[in-house]
Length: 521
Image 1 (cartoon, rainbow, N blue to C red):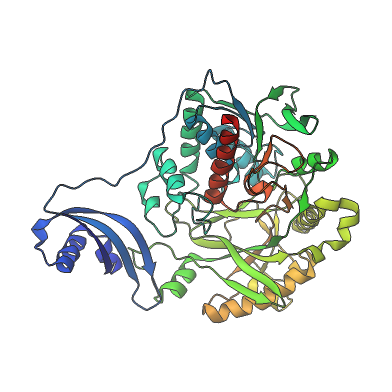
Image 2 (spheres, rainbow, N blue to C red):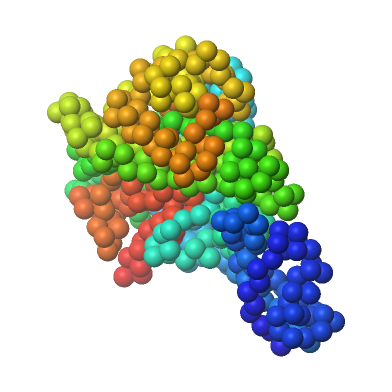
């Protein structure tokens, strides 16, 4: 007999198979010897009381052999000789999942990635961290796997109406992710493991006949009678196909500029901007688990915070327990920070983006000159100011939290995971005034929600500015095609239709499916 059971256990019990077997037996009124095994279908932690509990939804096997957890694998067709092909600009989650969907259905993808493969990309990241040298084509945002490869691999999304989340997670498992992402309430892969998964996906795509080309920066579109026929790359290569999926991510500013220069419709879009805040992980553990030392069977604690301050939304973004703050700039002279965690989340710091919504009235003055790129220019101006305040070489301007709220330049800064280093400054001289005011009010309120969060042990590092794209590329809600240019399919986070790995992957699949339906007509 198979039976689905919900258990509430201590962390130690949940980590002990014998204890789980005993709990199953007690729940169903059977001897332990009758319980042949189980697998977890959902796991979450309830830390609202002093005693944290692990809630397990499990499938138990009573008096019958144990069956392994089902993992759905996709089947790729041979597309070497396919009569149809689709160009995909960008090899992030949206582009990769679009490519896999096309191959499943017998269509050849041609992936054009401006950056390098994950192995070569690592050397450019080292140069950025240690020498302050940024490669505009290969960095934390550009390259195989996109920004997600070196940005932690958190897989939580609320976008369950956009596609099949379980399918997205199962594909990751098929290409090397641990199957625990299928049942954890907040699944996470880890930056140390994502490169291997990206490599496995690429090898599957090319093995099936898909074309995967690196260092192919698209610089022009071939358009006849408002129909996109193909693209031109920086090395003068031309590619033509039945359709073009534009999945370049939120930082491909040159693509936004190309679209505007060719009078292709785009729109400024609200985004968010602020700082990355770092606490000692032990402090976050103490606050969230209500104890001086975290139980060894509990993961490093995380948090999610949101506050309305003077009609501005302030919220935590991309929280990284046991994580590292990284320089995520894509151009010289601009300072951007992001955060990531390894799979074990075992670093001594916890960091999170803490950002404020940026609305059209905030960049109104830039609209006459920059039009649809006004929000992007606002974003870029803040990043340039941050770079100057840091003093160059991607040293970041920083300030202790309480000092920031009290308008005091910090006389010293705490240890921080940000490798290029910090420079103590008054962040009010870096951030827009409405951002500073909203952050100040929010930090005080967050300290009331999480006793101990508001502290000078925390350091603010500027700027966290790439939370989402400041530009939306419009598309028809049904065909997903650009309303002006036929055969152009804006897709993913850079086009303004996703926010993270899972939602971008689902959008990639959705766009690929609409193209497939059109090709069958």
